[in-house]
Length: 64
Image 1 (cartoon, rainbow, N blue to C red):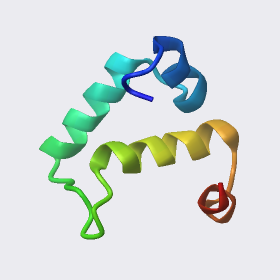
Image 2: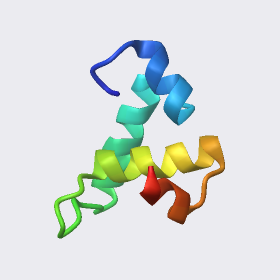
Image 3: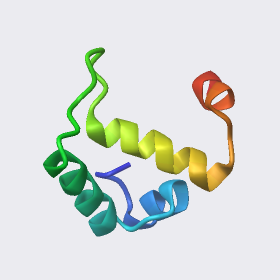
Image 4: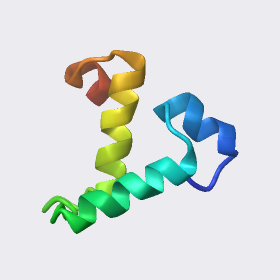
């Protein structure tokens, strides 16, 4: 999504690319790191924002 069309990230995650990048930087500065199972901060944030935009539950998001 990050390397795709600029409107796609907004459509899927509800934020513009520069906002997404700022959020990732802020989370990393606050001490958040990639998870132990290899999920990056970027991926974790994207999943969270996607759930917020779509209103899907954790269960439904995992099934997608």
